[in-house]
Length: 226
Image (cartoon, rainbow, N blue to C red; front, top):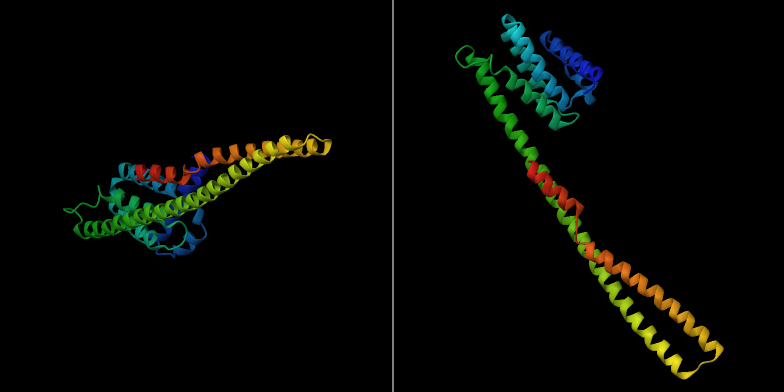
């Protein structure tokens, strides 16, 4: 991420934390900055909070409480990219775990644990839904390919029949007459035969590759990544 963009994201994060700490309305800020609610903000949140905890341990617990509150707000925010919103919330919850321990802050620890369980379940639901959509797209695409392949095979069959008919006609004309008019007809038929052969070759080439589905390959790659 370019430095300028990173600085803008960090300033946005600080504005959100300040508004949360001061009990201001955070939703309007989120609504006016939907493009900044992305995976980069989740990464910046992890790094910025970790640095602040290390540099200012005295304020760590107060900052952790603000982050928990902000993470809850973003987790429940229903605009923008819901997957990114969830990742930002998870980043916030996970960053405070070293500070909000069960022994020192049992109340906050319980809140974070419950929030994380819910967030992890929501993320799993999103993954499952995405996989289901990819599978459905793959089935639809394969069905379209099968239909197209059948149409091409039928066209190829008809082209072969036309080629055979033309061959028969040309042979008969050669045997029957050798007049100028017949020669012209034969020449025209030969040209038509050559054009049909070229068309047949193109159809056969397309048919041989029609069963390869780019979306199927993308689906398999997506499954491996998950």
